[in-house]
Image (tube, rainbow, N blue to C red):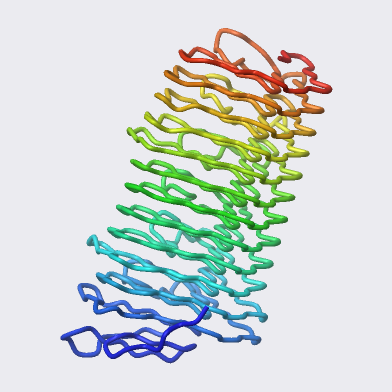
Length: 548
């Protein structure tokens, strides 16, 4: 991509060299952190078609920051305190209003390790933080293009509870590569593109690992377009120990490890007319211990949304895993679902107590293989909707392939299932749509066609392949449900001795449930038409429960 030459009144940057000007104002304070650029001057305004560009830098040496408990460093807006920050090839705006601004991180390469002990490690990242007072991000474009980052590591110190790059990520150790982070801002007419980025070995101990990801938290977003295209993320992992305490996608969701690879996360925000397009992304070896792993996925939680559209086409995810750990009870990627671990591949999850309309979720020709959750839930090429009241919305799954989707409940782990009223130790979803927890859906036809699910196993819980589930006092009206020409093979659910799992309805005790190419309605109302046509099932098994 060609970047036009900076005009007078704009900002041009290269590596650690920076100059900052505001129209009609003298030069303002610039903070240099590592090899990056940060503009942090609360109350100032950046306007006049400003350009912030970090382009074509190479870093082969070690970028390392190590801090002690007495070494607190203020970053973006002076309110985010990190014990140590290791940063390379990054650009940030803190506590300022930005209008007609281009924030670009382009063609940067990092081969040497970027390491932080007791803080955050950041490589090839665009950061925007509003601060204590709401700030406006208007007519702004964020580009993270053609970057390469390897070996980015962050370790949180024992007992330290720190604020990360965005307010919703309270993390003692955050590692981020080739990503864009926006928080506490009023966003208007945002266009964000993450394209052709490569991230490898992004690791967090006691926090979150973000690779080729975009996050929006505690913000008001209107008319936003987000594109993730041809990104590759490998070996992205987050883990936590007994001494680490960190907030996950929501401040109320306490997770010790969260991994996002080629993913979009929107939390505690207002979303009006948002377009999210993810195409041809590849993710492999994405894992979390004590939390959730999201690969090629979109997650919207605790947000009021209208006109929220997602399209995921041609994405590939393999070896996506999440482990809750023995005896752990942790909040998962969906705010109202307590689970020990959640692994999502090529999936869309929406959880919101407010009303929305005009939602359209499309998943086409995605492939997911080896999606595993120990002590929680695994979802491949699926759509989860919870609590939301939606009108004129739809969910369409066409030509997706999911294989080896497995959940192992584990005797010591406790987690709620897909539907709040059935407490399952494990649940596995492949090419499925779930409407749950009082979801009210009007004129929203789910369509599942030509999908293939193979090897879907729920140990101690639920296994669903190519199915639509409506549960927990939800209501669907005016719908034309279509489940057509799908193929399901080797779908099984197994309950084990001593597992206490209620069925889909609290009054029905079941230790396991297997579903394939079907519509399942539990304690809910559905009106409309249902078409089940041309589906094939081979080897549908439930040991200790029900198969249908």
